[in-house]
Image 1 (spheres, helix red, strand yellow):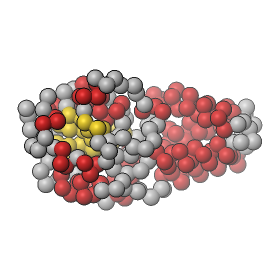
Image 2: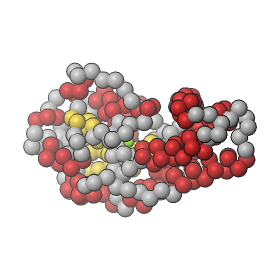
Image 3: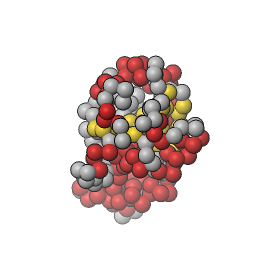
Image 4: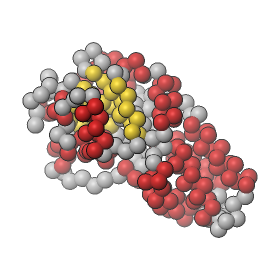
Length: 238
Ligand SMILES: [Mg+2]
């Protein structure tokens, strides 16, 4: 077995809190539009609009904000006022300025692992927003490389690995999303660790079989990672 030498981390809901910020804004949005439709109807529309828009705008706050405005226009049947549009835009700006709240134990784990491994961040979303969050997290010094991608699929991971001259067997990805952090990496022959977060965005949810789950390791939190690394345990020997 090749020795793992690069460990890459997802950022949102792996290193810091993200999904609750989206959920909080979504709740404010539903309350703002209550005069036009009931919250369940608006939410259902929003999920559908987001699904259509991901391929057009990509991931991140700006695409989400455009989906909020589009949803608002639809559910209000074009009665949406300029003042309401301003309020929706203010919600998006609020998200971009949200403080970066690190998940528990993250810094200690990075400090530990950066001594023996080359660490990377591989994230997706708005370039400026992700760069700003990385800067505000104060975690950048732990990472040798940072990649902000528009999609995290097999092709994208393959490109990142070849750019950095890393063989799949030397690579481990750690993240909260089975769809973006685990499955594409396992399919490429890399190692993956799933650290689920309390809430998962609808568009990241995938169904997996019990058999598939033997291909990666699932941990309750990032703090469980260092004692599990392959020198100590055979869990990654495939
Ligand atoms: Mg994530």
